Length: 66
Image: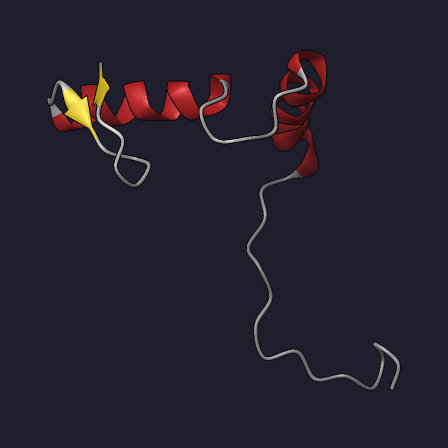
């Protein structure tokens, strides 16, 4: 079956590639692809700030101080 014959029920909603490239460039520059890397830490801090909390659990069994 080719993609032309396929019926896609769902497709991901992706941002424009130009918006996503800076994140990929940062990942490639620091070579950190796992949880706990710079982007993960930025997300945790942003969630702490948004939620107005000092601790945020983003990994199982890990307590983080913001």
